[in-house]
Image 1: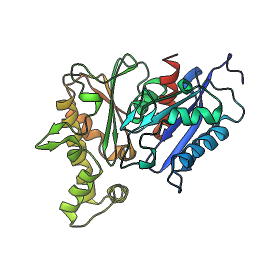
Image 2: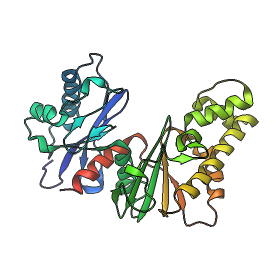
Image 3: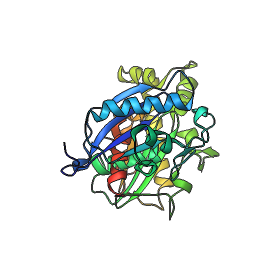
Image 4: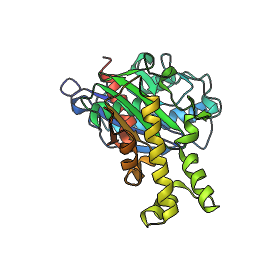
Length: 293
């Protein structure tokens, strides 16, 4: 494949336990084969960069790419390519990741770029998923925490009317605590424990709900109602056309989506489930690359 016919970029998604990589084409932001590897057992920056190099070689398979774009968790200096993570991957603290990877591929450091992983997820759904062509979009990734991203006309926004600082809503004051207290894994687990007096993982609660367990069903109905109310209250000023729900909890959307929609009846907000799943940040990294060149 020639890069002047269909430009390509190498894209990465760095998670808490593994790294994914693929080649993303400009046309349709289509991904090639996605390859994955665990974070290195040897906790050094050199070992981490070697995993990146090895994955990149596998993903490219001879394709000509213009550079690499990363979906990377924070805290991270996305402009300079330097990690400031202390609790996650502490061996990268202060490391200039862009320079390290560029040296391994014979590139210039500016050929390696970064964006926040939640923003990447959002851009993936905006460019190639559930929110294509939508003017005002908010994306929530529901899991252990609550990731969020705001977009207007296909561009991520981190400030402005109705946009929380940095586009991050997880720690916004809400109901005597913060948003994450109400719409996350721990909220579901807490609600179930209050009913049953026992701890279960969300996947297990969902399994019981699908089997008709009334307490598990009620937990998901309550979660959907809470989420719908939160969307209505927290996003009133931003006034999105579409809210996209992704993350692990969204896999159980059949158990709570109707409750979310019921709370949003009478508003302009449409709720959609993310289409790209775990590949959304990879596609979003490609979107970010090609929309900035």
